[in-house]
Length: 489
Image (cartoon, rainbow, N blue to C red; front, side, top):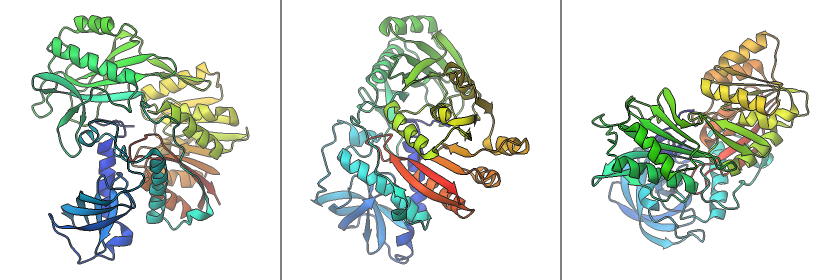
């Protein structure tokens, strides 16, 4: 699963999805407002009806859809149009005439400047409610399903929705002769220095601050994307919440790091409990964080994390859920949806290091998983061995290739668990599912729109949607995960 600049499954991905959503138009409104236009700079009163997929407020002016960042459902504002894009317009709040009772002061001092979070100005109870509504909107837009007739649950939230991210990916740059590291401001290439991000585990903040201080002191050149010169591109840190182990990954544009031995010794001196120091080399002009070559500079190749009775070895590029507290709730929801009785053959597609499959393994007769990242499959094999799961088999490759192969060999899955990237299931994989026809599909989604589209395709081919469980994996952002149970009719 590709990880882009900034937050993993980040604002860039989310922003792209938002543009797709907006440019496809709000279907319920686009047919009504043909010929109606607004102009940039125009001001008018606007009532916010609901929340958009990026967390912005959505209102209608003369039946034309208007997206307003920072506006909340139920609010009445004076809006100024900042951009017109055919079927929709974007605006900003000029005056807040009627506030939502859920509006609060965001605790982060650089909240609006950073853009890593979108909903800190909305109470947490309000966030959970609106995220469920975002899922509802997606299904109303792309399907004809009456959600009142299925088991559509409330969003599972966190008791303490702060400092929950176990991994940070901070871009490195220069500002006033000083090395900085952070995220890009929305819709810009301006890097915002993050000293203390309140959604990150405190250890990731500490590590990032130490590394950028050392990079400055040792005059290690930071990478300039436009000039394609420099060395240090990104500081990646992952922490084991339960074990306390942590790994520092220095993503560089070059194979050589100036004074690397001294750098390693200084990191060890300032971070004496560091578990692993790794270099990843990415010389390409790309928005992807990692390159193909990874080498360990100090300590272990992997760090260990535990969830419930499970422990996982995590290599730098292996995908692992970013919120371990909520991951347990997400996987419990997937296990409940799978409803295994001990006789089922289960496939864990997009398996990563095998987390979901291992969570379900005690209820399966046999478990098979696949992923296109070889390192993740090696981790999955180790994780299965460590936990004594002898009835699991992990293979590097694509599900659309392996499932038909296994079917021909006489091995038929009863349950398929999928946890795809934001783009959802591609058409080839859906065709494969429809040929194999498992009894149940447990779909773990990070994008309500692609989930709804995929469910619509599956329903048209003989499946039915049984339940939806939204899970808040990323408090204070507009993202929502959903566990969907889809059964063969």
